Image (tube, helix red, strand yellow):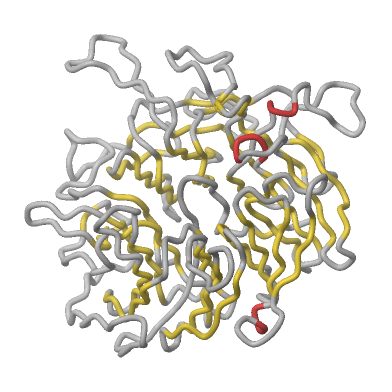
Amino acid sequence: MIIRHEVGVLRLRKVAILLFFLLPASLVLLSCGNATPSSSKTSGIKYRAFLSNWVSAGTESAGVYIVNALDDVRGNVAPISAGNTPTVMVLTPNRAQTLVFSGNGTQSSDNSFNLINNASESNAAHVTLPGMTESFVVSPDSSTAYVAVPTAPVVGGPPGIVEAIALSSGTVTGQVDISSIHYLAINNSGNRLLGFSDNSDFVAVITPTQIGIGNAVTTIGGPGIFDRPVAAFFSNDDSTAYVISCGAECGGTQASVQQYNLLTNTLVASVPSCVPTPGTNPPQCANPESAAGSVGLVIGSTMYLAGTPYSGGAPAQPCTGQITAATTCGLLTIFNLANMTVVNTAPIIITDGYHNRIAMGAYGQLYIGARTCTEIVPPLPPPAGAETRGCLSIYNSLTTTQANLPPGGVVIPPENGDATGIQPIASRNVVYVVQGGSLGIYDDRTDEFEYNPNDPDNPGRITGLVGNFIDVITIDF
């Protein structure tokens, strides 16, 4: 069974997630946005990585930076304008456009939703949203973006809307009111959206063609079925949704994965995201609060789910088996979706924090990023053997040892900071990771920074790349 991974995956309380589409290079613009003049100069790079930088300092400006992902060299062009504080980026399904949200909740935040034309490497249009967004998705035909704005004012009702934006013109074509709507997932055919609201056990089912013109929303689930759901994945025929419930980490009780039949609106199976207590049927956690899951990746019929167990409103997972000064950690749980069982027979310990990034490298190394984790920062100059610990975990998913990491082993690279962007580089053995505002280049065969012949004394870094970076994506095959 093949399951589609819905990017737009979840994040309660913290960050963001995703979306896609295309636009002509010379869009004039809509009533709620402005056109940005196109640049006549492009980088000429055939395999490009985009990095969002939200800080202007000295001669460097906020914007989307271009890097040659084949040789790790910054492009000799100015950053693409994308609002005051560019953060989350998503590539459209047809790879013609990159969508960039500019907003960080500060005074300089402009809540600008930018459409970058990848061919001209220019900002074709932008829309000013009525608030911050952490989740937006795009129709499979790259024609429409759907944006969740949980704090958008609603006349006569609680805040929260989903806006539909026609990406051929950059105009808002309709909206639907959904209280505190935070995250979205779109199915394979594009005829159904699932919406997830804060502090709710219900899931909104949205019919995209009815947004703005009719009764577009129904609800499924509720207490006893979902437990603070935050994301979903779909079977190939769209008959089944695999819903991730965040549980205690998001103010509920127990994190789990639910198999839900969308044709009959019935729950098929629910499995806690923990190593089940032996002999329990259905599977049960020794303690409901020991389950965790806030970000997932699906490859074939395998789901990798990462999160931090909470008890009494605080992180509660000990770092068993790791030599670290950190007192709490997170968990990775592996599911077989074909038979709805947990694969790992012992807890897999990773960093704590709110996990919101996950990707598989070319050599079977699973990169897991979190925000606001327990960091260990050594004094300067660091004494010999001093621990450095941040929010990136690397898990060996292979059945063989890789880079001295045994099967099922986890390494925490000695780098500080939130891990806010992860992008494996196709056709290479490297993974780009944005951590602590800097881009690091990991060799997937060693789980360490790669040797960069362009700057031998500075492994894992790109010469001249200065800024406070948030996200990274590649836009070419």
